[in-house]
Length: 268
Length: 293
Image 1: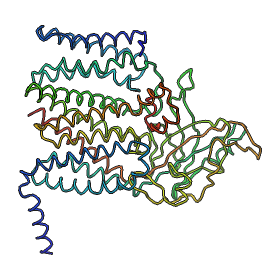
Image 2: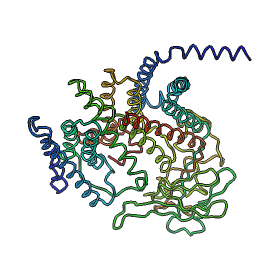
Image 3: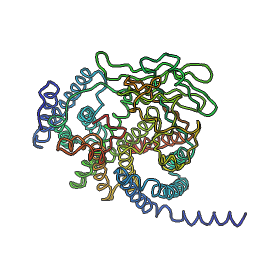
Image 4: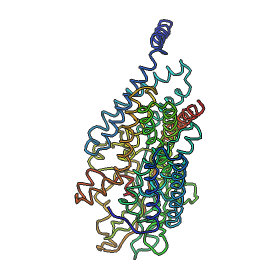
């Protein structure tokens, strides 16, 4: 765990500190203070994205670090839209989710950049990966919102959770389909039994299962939680697990057996 | 005929009687089944299970799943749940597409070797002609474009001379389409120790290995299908690009550039992509319904 000293890192650190502030602001304080702090996280997030885009020369979506850069601004946007639609202020819960993503971005992931490989130079590059980031953001917050709604009996927050889930599922489906169409254009097949493809399909099936369970059922919350586990494994299978285990000294042969490079190895 | 019609009518009435009441329980069960499917797909993502389960269990699971989907679509139609019809119909289309792909897709890897540095253009050209069915293609120039000041590839391309006399450039992310065939630019490289100049274009089924190829069965996708050799038998031991090049009978350490192409004809793509469209539209419909509620 190291802090990489650069302007980008300080922007990320700023987001982390502000997000922690939003989590920690007591409820007795004016709610506007919390919202403004959360808005600042969004502003800093957009600045970080713009800086990274300028530095690397392409939309920053090539690896997990770059894809996660989009999550704080997307969370802030989701909070705003939720408040607009349901009058629910979810900024504190969204900030907690933001902290979970910002911490590894500041202290764990490498900020090194590399040129965009030929396969990634496609019109599908941005909508596919951005669609996934949007979907993951909405689906993760759907779980947390529903959890709070059930614990404190808040029907409006439950409504916000269902809304977040519905749009998250749409973006998940769209991103999965776009990825498959892109695969057909670049790799010559729309399905290749690639581990990451399979985890993505498995994640989609979990969320399809959520649709088949009534909104009042406790199982819905459980399934949303299972979905988060699947999202984490999907994200980490090709991109994080091999790097972490490699750093712990696991041999290349073992890594290749456990996590074969597959078609998504470029993101390692 | 009347007896058969009456039987199906009665069967459908029995299936749908009290369907409104049972709908929730049915959906609940379907949800659990989907969760099971997700766990199953996740298990398949573990490489150790991949080979043993893929071609047997998956096929039978998908068969049962398909039947369930058809029943659900009919039930949704009966209950006038049109978004559900669109969603389940879309998944049915995707599965039909997958089945068509597995049964009928043809796919060949084509590796064209460029000339060793001392060879002439005429010699190189002789190595670059290949046939797919009755149609003959020829690879012209091929190259790697690097990012300025680096050796990192920015793009790979190959010029393809098509049977109708025209010439098109295949790039990564921009395949050439001709008469049902799609030809993809897949790889490009230079063999570090030189490569065996094969006396014609090398064409082999994708992902082949000698053992399964010799048994006449080539596993791909959801099912196994029989492979039909379109250009006659090949001398596989000479494929390995790490073997030494023999230029005019002499072992050579010169590097040989190669371009890797993939030719594919897949009648399942249209079905699958139509299915994607239906499923995405249905998901959008669910989201809009939730928003407008």
